[in-house]
Image (cartoon, rainbow, N blue to C red; front, side, top):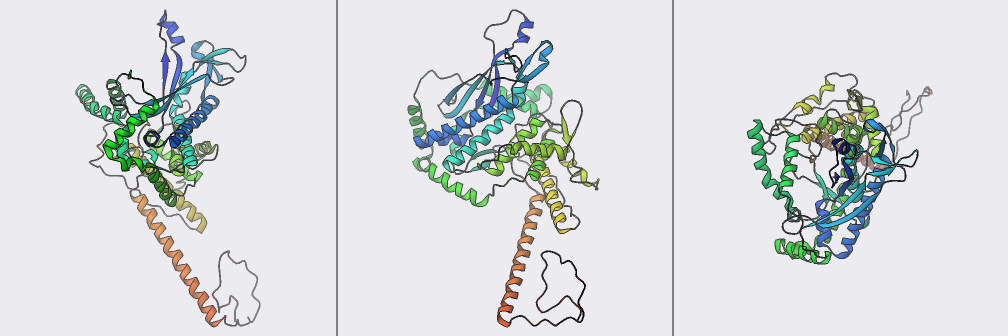
Amino acid sequence: MLGRPIEHNRSPKTDKAKERTPWLAFDLTFRPPPTAHVAWALMDDRHRRVLELCDAIARDKTLAWTEESVAEIRWKAGGGKQRARVKDGLVVAVFRHYESRATESRPLLHTHAVVSIRARRPHDGKWGNLSADSLMTHIVAADTLYTLYFMEEVSARLGWAWEPREVTPGRRPVMEIAGIDRRLIGWQSTRRQQIEDALPVLTAKYEEKHGHAPGERAAYALACQAADQTRPPKRTELLSLTELRTRWRTSAIRAYGADVVDRLTERARAAAAAVWARVRPVVDIALAAVDVVAVVYVMRGAFARHHLLAEARRHLSYVLRGRPHQPGLDERIVQAAIDDHTRPVGRGRRMTADLRALYPSDTEDQAVLRPLTRSRTAAPYERARIAAGALAVRVRAARRAERLGSRPRLYPVAVPAASTSHPRPLRDGRKDGRLLEPETGVDVDTVEQTRQTLEAAAAQMAATLQDSRRAREAAHGLRPQPAPAAVPPPHAQQPGTQHTPGRTTGVT
């Protein structure tokens, strides 16, 4: 979801007046993932209407959260020192669009929600101006909430599942409908290719001017500049949605064949069955809090609550794959992360990670994330996923140690080596969190897989011994127990222990 202020059409008389009222409305753009556009454009009318309904429900729920938890109205001089929640909600106008600005028309189901700057004060009911910074601060958290709601509605109404798709190696993945042919994503996203074609020219000019490659923030700014330069004007030819869908279907069949287009629904159902067979949609709040803190900490260093909230919603979308989440579960994950694994830093509301709860006595282990945060041999989100996996292994080891009454065993964490597919970034920006997220694992995944294999082998051996014991008892019967010479003193038996048949615990 994108957000931008809509400025005045008329220039104010003075600069002071322009500072007081710089914009009239705020445009929030809601857009589903690319595979949803493909399914909406190429499937039958029933699926089209259901996807539009899912988009509308997710949009309305996100707007309701925005007006209840985010929107603030300001008043009084000095930059609006007095702020409070709005009264009677927001004034929003919704406009749905169907196609992108590509040279050749392509499907792009998206909705513009124009939020008026005017809202009512809670104490006196008078009209005032909304605070733009509160809306802009939570724009990413609102985007992740919309995606989470949209995934849940699609899975509940159509039975589809979701899976991560890595757009750029080493960066944050996007959740897509499982079973949709990936080639159709390239057919639908022609604007992305236009931006990628224009980006090398702008990057070369930046390197010539500054003498070094752009960092993450500069690279994001160059990508926005490339998008603006390659943005074509709106088409003046007016076509109905039926005509557009006919054109899109003809174009997709001409590019990839009728079999790919006609079997979209069938393949989505089959892929959903495969996803639900291998994925267990269970949320562990403690592990989720560790995962969220590790990712945000490695990406940003110092962060705020809304960064944790956005990452918690990404975590839920990946773990649940479209299954519904309990209301307030994202807030519970954020609160657990703040209470157990963060500490305040600097002035304001910023915080950073505090891992002493995971490493209470070993100071050397507290530095396990230091090589990951300072390394420049891998993409930031790749380092973040490895750090999250290392901490998750630590939590599981502590749980096993507590259950078995032993000392936790520490596992090594390897820093990823430089890769030709991931060029070494010269500067590591912290504030731009709009990266793509892969599921990476180096030694952490190997250790976890080995542990699961050993546990499965131990369980199988225990079951074999148990079956063998029962077979002997059925064939020969229990041996008579000799009476003890003296009654032993009573003792507490450990729960879950069993004595071997034919032996006693007393003294003969």
